[in-house]
Structure formats: C-alpha cells, structure tokens
Length: 308
Image 1 (cartoon, rainbow, N blue to C red):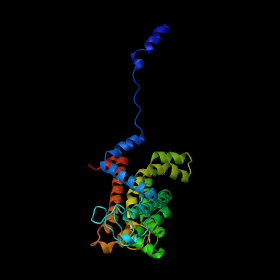
Image 2: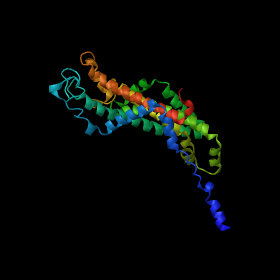
Image 3: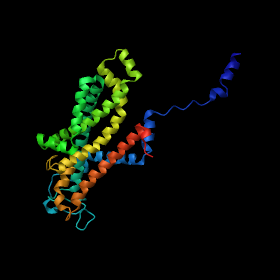
Image 4: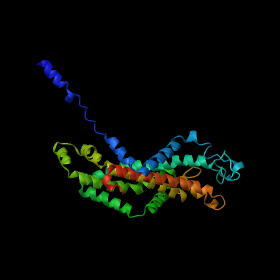
C-alpha cells in the first residue's frame, strides 16, 4: 500500500511545473517607464550629463578658467581655422568652451539638486504639519505659501538675491524659497486624502505617535507625486538659476555657469555665434531631458495619467 501511494505521489500531477513568481515591483515600474521612448532617452541624456559633471576633472581637456591668449574666439573644429585642441572653440577671453560647458554642468546640476533636496525636505515637513495639525497651523502655513506663490517666480528670486547678495549659495536659497510652496501644497493635499483612510485610523487606535504616524504611515503613500514633482522641479530650478546667472545675480565670474556664460557671450551673437549657441543648447537639452524623465516617472507611477 505504501509503495502504491508513493507511485501515485510521483505521478504526472506531482511533476507539474511550479507557478512562475509574480514580477517584482521594480520590474513592473521599469516596464511601465520603458514604454515611453522619450522617457528612456531623457534618462540616458540626464545620466550622461551627470557623469560628465561628476568626472569633469577627468573629462574636460582644459581648466574652465584658463585663458589661452593665442586662441581668443577660436572657432569650433568643423569651421575654417578650427583646431582639435579646442573642439568647440573658445570664448571672448580665450577659455575653452567644451571645458566650461562640462564644468558648467556640475554647477547647474548642483544648484538644481540642492534646490530640489532642500525644497523637498522643507515642503514635506510643512505639508505634513499643515495636514496633520490643522487649525491655526494649517492657516498660517497655507497663507504663507499663498503669499509666496502670488509673486512671479523670477521676480521673487530676483528680490531674494537683491536682499541676500549675488552668489552661488544665495542663488540656491532664493530659488528654494520660490519652489517650496509647490511641495508644501502637494504634500498637504496628499496627506489630507490619506488621513481619512482606514489604515491611518487603525494606526491611531493602535497608539502610534504623531511623528511616527506622519513619517512612517502617511508619507510613504504620498511619495509617488512627490518624486514626479522633484524631477520636474529639478529642470525648473536649473532654468531659474540660469535666468539669475544671465542677469548677473547668480554664480559670479569666473564660475562656469551656463546662464552666466550666455550673458558673457551676448555681444558675440552675430560675429561668433558658437560662443552663445553652445551654453543655450546645453540648457535646452538638459531641461528637456529632465522633463521627459519626469513625464516617464509620472506615467509609471500613475498609468491613468498616461498620454495617448
């Protein structure tokens, strides 16, 4: 009898293949993200620019502030008189354009990432406090954010820099002030929607403290729109910093910042157009790539928002 039962156990039914494991959350996310070819292209370009910025001392052929007096306003290599020593030519004082663009990526991305990180943290703290405590706290935070958003972004940034003084650090502070309300309003709206759900009520009944409730229970369910906003806010911060640099209120010479490079080359727009073209293209390509990446993140986190 035992042998018969063992034979039955080893029959065809016992040899059926196991059910495949469900795909991981990361694989589902990457599958949704990869459906948008523009998002993948944007990710590739952003990663390339970031690598250039990180390894700028190894990649750049020259120092970004070194002046070559024998090659002032040298044309790029594909034009008559160009040289492989200066692939993209030189600017009005003989500095290598390619090296300044590479180091400029480091400055512009540093400004964008700094603004994004500080705005993210401050926005999360104020947004969660406003949604959780309500009452006077909610009114004060909401009214303050409304006042900030009532002033045009660039005007407010110029005002902040005028008060603090033009510098790289003050540019980060000014642009952060401009973009904090976006995160505050987004976190507040998402947190208010989560506070009425059953799992939050259950956590309160279980005796979870306010700080743990906000950071461990509510915040993780608000992260998806925050990540998308952070990606899009990065490009906005780079544009804002470039605008301040163009006006002479951002990073000061000889710092190779793309907006300041545009401002320095305005006078050569007719005679040596490459000097003003390359910084503009760097800003355009980087900002568009980050926006494509942000659109891909939005579609991956919320397929219902996907464009047809």
